[in-house]
Length: 521
Image: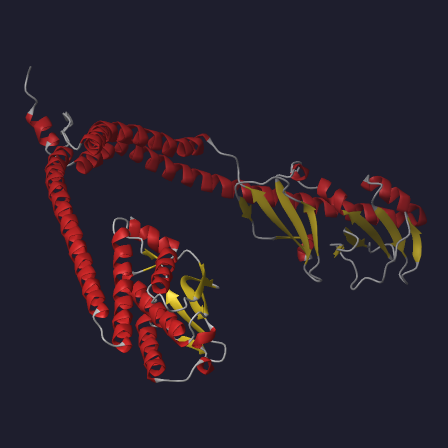
């Protein structure tokens, strides 16, 4: 097999973008030159032809209209000489039943009329050029003519349709628009309109007719496409097709197919964890370099994932060890408190030990709940926490004491560990104070959502024992108020007290569903 030529080797060393630029430039250069030359020549020829044809058509239309006015004036002169019999003769000569002819004497008296007409004396005597005016309301053109040998004047009303017939033969086909304008009054009369939606229009300067009394303006439709213009239209399409075909061929061979092979290799790496660079026959140097770089990156990622898994397993072991040690230490503290409580010589000391032990139990309960949720990290559920806490407090009373009646109405909410500890301590203070002040009292604990706030819940404790007048105010009750005030500050929410009804309410921050789902992920 012969080795590639030096030119091919040099081209293979170029970047893919430069290859595409060179190929497309060489392919589109002849088409671009041809399209440019054809566009220039076609534009010049069409512009000259369109201007010449439009001016010729406008001039021819103006001359036809002037000729028609002169012919109508000649008919009026002849009709005026015929006297009262000239009106019907004039209409017949004009050859238009819709036209009207009338003859007046010098005083303005109507001598004859082909149909009822109203007229006033002309503003000036009619000379060699008849007087032409436009009546926009009746859509007619009025001509007033007179001869020197017959006194009076003759008047003709020419409707718009009759005037349109005197124009160019193609005027009524909707190929161009013609408008007459009265130079004196400014009134206009549209003789023909463009009915189609042409690609372009040329509006010509108005031409004077009827001795300058009227002006004729014309709008001409752009001529249809010529052969040059069709070629000019098709050339960009051919250029686009050529560019798309050549560009697709180059990009498919040099980029897309190698990238598909790389994608298959990446998919296999995602499933098997091993990346193998596919055999790339493309001359694109960048794609081959990308494959080698990705292989090195895959090896690095695999090594780091193994290290992370090992570190995570070690961290999990350490976390569990810390949990067991904390749990054991709390159990040792609870056992020591129990031993000292049994050896206490006074009831006050026993009550003090019991109070401390309740708080240690509450802390141990929160710690146990936190470790139970540690695997998914979705927060501590308050419903089982509050239920177990209330049961422990009720069971911690001495056998001789009358237990309270505790009712729970707690929704399913989750909180962080620090909030759970503060809530647990607050409930311990409230329930313990109620049990001490009024043995056998009723305690209602409720946890419900706050309207319009998915991240907050309202915790309320209701008991007659929490009313200020339920029992004498002693040092224990004053200490209780200071403690719950401090706990409320830890929860970062004001504690609302109804001291007459014995209700304590506070809002706490909870984890909404979106936060819990994000933490779990």
